Image (tube, rainbow, N blue to C red; front, side, top):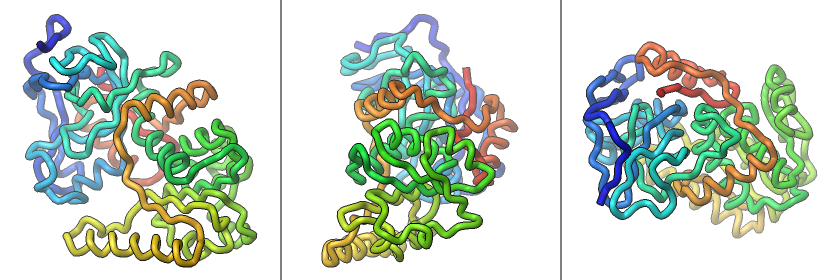
Length: 347
């Protein structure tokens, strides 16, 4: 039987899009969205804050075939809030009243809403140290950085790690996680962001505007190169001089046209397979283009590492939950100039 907090409303506000295009052209505010029915292993979360990520506006541009998306899509994959209802098969990890953070699936209604329905397996407890705005900045960036560094990079204490895009939403968390796990970190960012990245724990900074990092390091210096900003072509080309043979190159940014057509998707997959085969045959560094997996247990584990290191999230800006304000948040994300995460405060 579903259990709920008392006095839940019948409807709530949510931002929605139904056709592809720019956020300013396709986003609308629905002030009477029916609350979803809580069934199975789902829980209903009252959302207090949500993050705006590049994946949100890339999806609006048509970054995933529409047949894979809900007919009415609510953007936002990062949320923090309070559990207000628990489905009949849920309740093993969270209860009503728990403060949580969640990395939502791309293929469900998202977090820019007053309430959202999530599977309990995706939910992680919010550390008491962080506000809801801070917690909402955590899930996607932290899970991406954790999986890049730990799951694929096989990070060990004492490893030397290069992080490209070290001042961005994912890069800032990657710097903090790598330091918390005992790595020596070289951060690549603009000179204007150098002090911020240094304050996050980076041991060295390379200003990409004045220095080619692949020319600066030529003695197989790194155990892991994590590119959180580009498609990594320059690192792949110099992998034999930049990365140890036993090391790993980890990327999260695919080619811009990768999801344009099934052919583009197949071609991109073939390119990744070719590079993996090349690394195997040449006994060179590993090559990984990753898609972040959703897992509430792993999210809690990564968040605890950050919490124990007192590594608090880096927030660029906080916006109100109105259509004009959220559109401004999207414009900031599209600009690529955010230093840390962009947050929308909802409740």
